[in-house]
Length: 246
Image (tube, rainbow, N blue to C red; front, top):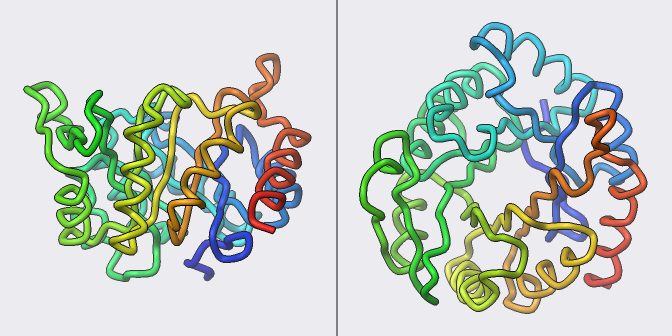
């Protein structure tokens, strides 16, 4: 079973959602395997049904699945850890406080686990209070460098920077990207990314020297009628990526 995600030119891996196995297979082909396909734990009533269905996705696309929370819902943290222990996916989305649990239950270091941190409106600072209880309390604002060190302590692979609001927090994102590059840490920009701003967001991370970038492009490329990710948009995203990396 393949645990390490495919990256275009070793640097960029798309993260998009699928609403069916057929949609996932089409995404995987359109992205030329440089993608992890998000499947949201929140869409399932219990662990057993999530595991059974996600295993089908994993078989269809060489295990290139990303186990998701569902709109960053901290209440899904435990479920994500528990089903991922069984699934052994290539990629896991976690709130900050759930990273260590996910890594321990996995029992291996290959799977990429992100830790969700949020913008604060101040360059150089992020909010790490994104867990089930901490998200309901006062913000825990720390330097980006400290957040990265804590995530490394817990076995995390990357910062999930959420919610970005596209380029709303551009100056903050630029600083986060530089810190990730300097600390050999992956970066996952998330929320508000579309075909119009994707190139600018990716270029910031590339120019900063981030080793691995996993941009999440979700609702903006989903067909509202069918709920499926639009394959032509995935092709466009890959084309933009290739142009920026070449």
